[in-house]
View (cartoon, rainbow, N blue to C red):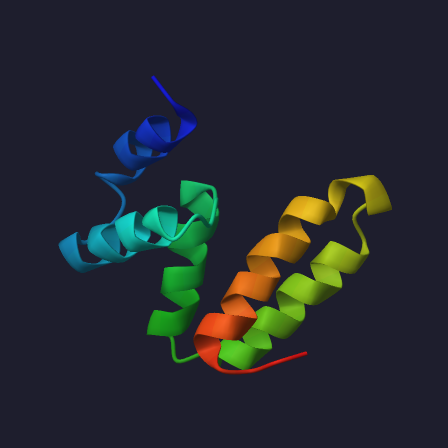
Amino acid sequence: MTNMERFRLATKNQLSPEQRQLFDLVLAAGITIHPKIFKVLMDLLALNVPPHAILSLLREVRDKIPHGQQEDMNENLTAWDHTSGSHT
């Protein structure tokens, strides 16, 4: 079983049907994200936290991660920037 299949199975009971569809779309777009992090992001958006505030928080967290482990996060944040319309 691949990691993506495991992610999908892990989120089935945690996400609403709409969130599951969005999670599948995120994975299909090539963005790898842990299901629990995805769920937290969905909860923050449901609480009307502005997406740019979430992105800023993710960047702050990324900056605290050792440089060698940042490459995957940089790719995911770049993909987010392009889909949200904001450019850095």
